[in-house]
Image (cartoon, rainbow, N blue to C red):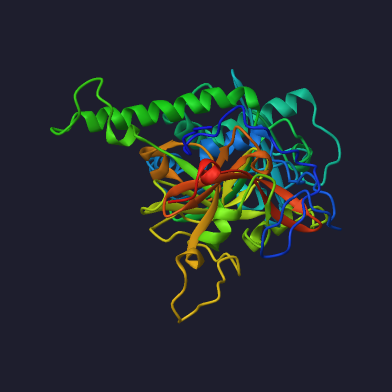
Length: 424
């Protein structure tokens, strides 16, 4: 077999994920040897719906904030997507629900009515009332709300959301809280120096329109850049469009050359993954979230790193990205611990820093610049089922997969670079 290490051959036999590997913690052992270790099992992960992921891509980036803050008086814009039931009404003294209608779909805005006393006359039921108003009274309240909210509708119209109109303004805001068929966004911003907080629910039918508006705003920015004297020629790929490969760094460990030479398909490595991945083990607390580091760039060089939480097909960025040339910028616990020796050693005992990475998604430079906490990336393969790469000094030297041994996470070797000869 003469396979380039950059590609995993399709005819290599896939190791059964449910086989029972054997391993001496900290070392490697052939999987066929008997051992009392518990059988491997699939990794349970908290699900994030595609709707939440789509919404996060729309609002959780610097471009969306830049577009919003172009409106007069808007500052400190922050947005976050979440699942149904995640919002808390404790922030509001009197939760109110504003329903807006557009030809493409409806928007529901939950906010604090007590902070907007001018809207009290338009909200129903009337204060202290228990029944819905008659049609005539309801129409009157909607008309009054439309007049009071005209500045808001005008601002939304400048963003491209024309044809919006008020459907109702209710005091009870909880009816929308449990609906799972809407995209939810938590908003906070200041308008003319006054802080505002709102929970926004958008019907999925309206998302294509919002995505189109977002794209058109970005296109205007590109066209403006092309008017500069140093603009690229038409049809030429700009630097901002260059795709940068991405990976998830699941852990790192020092392994000697002799150990790497001894690794063969079926062997399992323990104590090699970051301690922050422990929630992937069956039986971990349901509220816990597995976390790792996502990296974009070339291994071995300076890369963009962002702490993320892991779901089956999604990554959620939880902190601001940073640029570093360190192999593993996050604290991997004791996964890089190694006994230091001052005396000369045989070359076979030389330790190499090995990282365990999973390919994610390549992003253009313009999108990397826009990454912010709350941004969600969709993966083609769940992390728990993806093929891992063993990387040292920027070079891929092997492939593996995630398994569990008892309550511990491990890496089962699928193929090593020295399958046809020793590592040089």
